[in-house]
Image 1 (cartoon, rainbow, N blue to C red):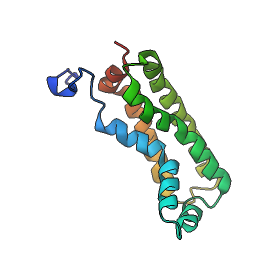
Image 2: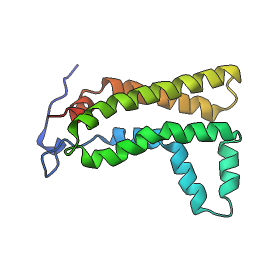
Image 3: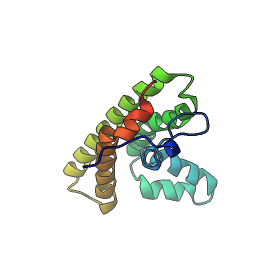
Image 4: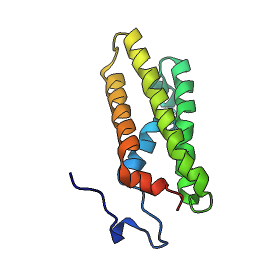
Length: 147
């Protein structure tokens, strides 16, 4: 298996490592309830119906918002990672723990409700894949290194 190596195109003009596209997609996956809230707010007439369709249980909606906070903070921190390198380095662990907690809650919910929807199952599988990539990607780990 080939090892990951630094190449010049993995750095921006200021000398910082570029965050991989998969990282941004994972942040969007983790902040999906926030994205849904923004989309519902943008479509005023159909916003309530959209939220009710995706989150018939209001409790799950609020849990989704809370679970999306670390991803939203990571989006904000990504621009400040040179200013607060230790916080940025620690935030990878926050994202990992948050994703693990979300996957566990989803798994328990699917188990209790006998896998009600294919969407919930697909989201659980995506979250598990994202967790594995966040934990194992050497390139991403290097992006969080405070040096």
